[in-house]
Image (tube, rainbow, N blue to C red; front, top):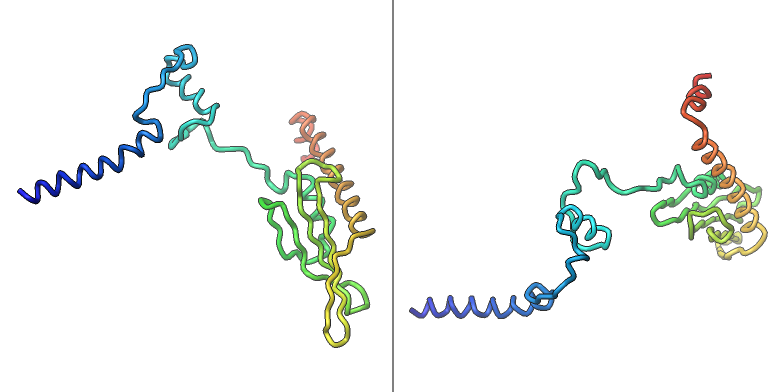
Length: 191
């Protein structure tokens, strides 16, 4: 008899805990809606909910293959940046994060100076404010006492200009490829 009372008591406590949770998310409250806003066909209601960002979908079906992805090879600004600094060893290149960082590089007779470049992409558009380029100079003295300075000047502007010029060329090539009919592209590759 006591075990039945304990079981009933536990069930009541669980119900009392779950009940406020259900009412807070609106599961127990009725909200009248206009019938015009919700079509009677389930497919149309589902489509409307998806467009409004409501609910979740577990199975997308065979027609939807997934989202659209911009890969690094299709982004002219990214490609131009990599080609412009291809003489330097790359430490990190994260397309998703929009950043390229090179390792320290020394191409001069002076072994005590090195450069490191960081390129951050602020936009995919080919504009001057779409790139944030930082050039770091490391000057080391004979006793290996190194000073790292963030260089803001001529080299930053030259890099940005070179990247933007090359990106514009890539973008122009992409546009002309899209405009040409399939036969013309096929004939060009056959030669």
